[in-house]
Image (tube, one colour):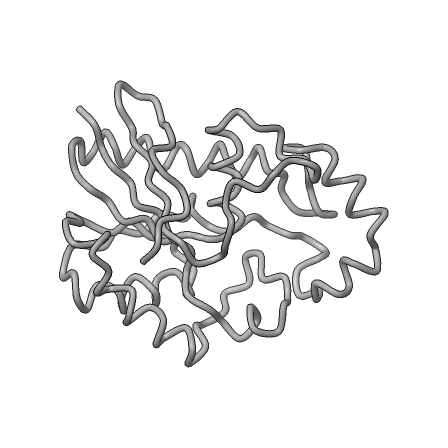
Length: 199
């Protein structure tokens, strides 16, 4: 039996607007993000959702609550869907990382081993997120589940499930920040059905 997951990134926060690394800092949605999430609830792609599975971080929970004003389905939280822990780089600006280009590039060339200082690596993010989806597929077999999570989680799932190395020279499988991504779990295996769906 197939369980379908429609994944999306939380709506925009002030730190997103400022291009700051949030990691597991518990930031709320910006006013712009609140409007975004409310509009997403009307998407035809979300019409047949049976339940919402969300990261337990505030920005993801708020997004789920606002989308659910239209959907009116059960909402479950799972801490395994949190953003990657960025360790010492949490709170830095994208411009700060660009100023450390050589250091960042060397770490990015490690693919799933990319780990900010005192943070977690991408393989750890994949392992916990995939475990969360597998558990949800067992508990809600055959359902259509909206997953509200984070950019790092979406990216690592896409790269890994497509058999990619997650290194800088690869073409990015997720083309824009705010799109829907369709995964399927069947016979205990996760697979990509379609990425970059419009809301």
